Length: 167
Image (cartoon, rainbow, N blue to C red; front, side, top):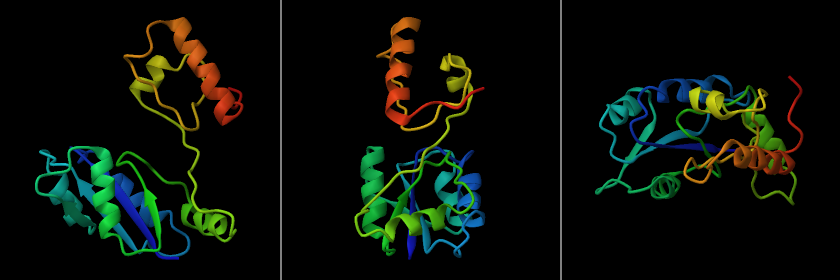
């Protein structure tokens, strides 16, 4: 398996080094085939840092106008046979590459996603459960008008991703 990791960025200099280091250090089948940083016109030195970290930098002219456009540009430059899309603030778990390889050995599997846990001040402020929030979670602040609506949303999200772990 030749794993291409694609990371879209916009002013992610504070997060990118840890994400790249984790992707390299947590792989157990060998280093990733390539790590591609698709930058959307960062102004904080992210692009220079990406080159310094040894990643392949993709910068469009003009810069991609969205995360989706950056992902598409990165995917177009990828030379691996498996693509892993990560955010710059994502820290992969040990053996993430083996998990991908094992999943893709099943001929019925064509893609997948990792379960993830959210962390940080935004989650701590809005996580009324007091437990780690895991799974595909999207909170749009404009769509949540009060605590009751947030509780209902978390209930629906919990049913989608499975039971949250006990405290």
